[in-house]
Picture 1 (cartoon, rainbow, N blue to C red):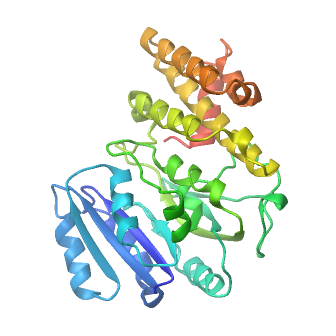
Picture 2 (picture 1 turned 180 degrees about the vertical axis):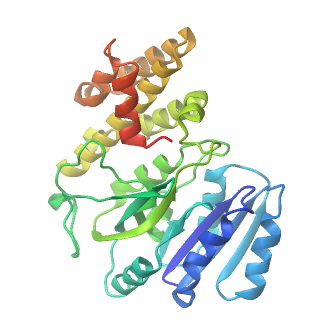
Length: 323
């Protein structure tokens, strides 16, 4: 069994996918790399097969009709043979030294969730994101997790799940839906018992392409997708049914962030249609779980009339890191 299955979903990624793949090959003996071609119309599939031919014992290729990012992750998870599972977007990459350290630690421990730092890469500037209130370099449980800051939450970039945990929660991300990385992180959390945090700049998250889903204008245009994912998270479970207090608080914290981002994006759109979407989203939350609604903190600030333009934008950008 390989130690980690890395899945790289690709759609028209010929210009940058090789950097993502090459960043993993230095530790190929311990890794399985699954390249998923999601109906690309460029040379993505050709490049994938070139790598498979060169590294037949490391690289697998899946060629499928376009189904979106979540569909690519689903396809990779279905055939993954590694003990752990990690998604790398085709325009991102992994730090070589950090990868060595991660492999070294994972060979010595057994945990449900391994957490690392991620680095925002934008226009030649890099900012590493840390977790200040998580126990470092030893196995810990939810009982030992401290309070997360508003801009500090687990992203797909920072998590390496045990493959069996993802299968235990029957992870199946929706097709043709943006922002499913939130579902990828959120859905397995109630199944996680043990964790380990290694503070290294493992994942490098590139921001700068105008067509990226986290570009501000793109996010406003796709606010329906953001709302859809937020509603799926609200409907997934009732956090107040979770016995562990710290896990319950974190799940609510994540929902607070999602509600904040959805609300502010609708406000930034400045249309009557968007205003209606805000009301509907909050009404749905109230119907689904009044207790969760009352527990939100930051999202209520986003509803205030004055939190519309500059303050609202800065808050949402600090949380979600738009371009």
